[in-house]
Length: 390
Image (cartoon, rainbow, N blue to C red; front, top):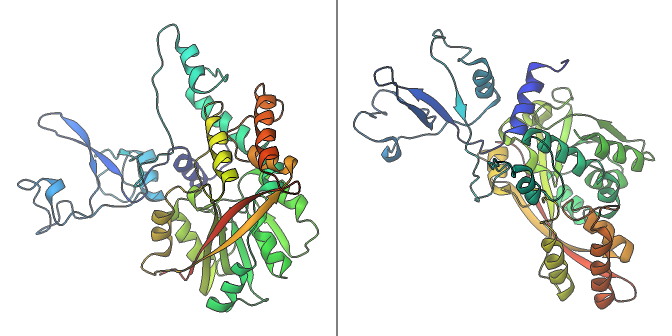
């Protein structure tokens, strides 16, 4: 009830996610009463550019899609265009849920008849929840809350080569203030803190944020704030470098870009980085991938970290082609660490779940067959994109 209009709009956009480079707008013919949706076009009815009476929109060479912005969503909620002199025309939009890489953030399924709960539960394991809205919100808190400790302890950090590249390309200096947006449990922040930099972590999830605050309490140069990429609680022109680690796929990159431009000093820099786990690197990693994926039916998987990064990067950096680099590194685990790393993925049974003992037995067998001196290794490529926003 106490949230601002901007915060409400941000919440709507996070709950109903799809492509942000295009949206559909509802139309209705006053003559025939027919209605439908079509992609919003910047050149619609523009003289000499739009001739939809003779040329279908899909065949028009001047078609230019409009992006889905916070203002568009605000007009949708209001039911009309706020800046339009004619409020008699309703403003209703639709999102395109299928992303460019043929993945999506949500699925809709219709379960009815007397057996709907049984079939509903078959999709989501043993979670019989009476309505889909409750399911969505329940799963978000169930996944991210309990995972915070495992995520902090067992997810990989970032290699020192990332800092070396920042110093080489953009002249990173100790006096710079770094904002880690979507900072999670502080894995990327720690890289900068260990090197003596001042870091402000901005993270929306309370459990993740509190885990970072506990783990990084010994760093006097770390400050933690609640916030999202689309509404960053920092002053204008207050940041020298924005860092995003393993979080870009959660952002509305159009809105995040506006916020980044607001808080950056003129000439400030942005780094986007993430760790790609090499699932096919060794016999162990191949079997690990097969085993964990075979358990994805027990609990629904999280959106994969490889969600459309390229689309997000294009929107974020604009006309500028960012500098890119990649670095290989490894992470070693004993059996306890391997189990913790698996739990941090979110889609396998967690401690105390009915299937956890069976999963642990299978993972122990895998570890025993592949361990060397009591350890197994994960292999990663850290990908880095660095630039100034064009």
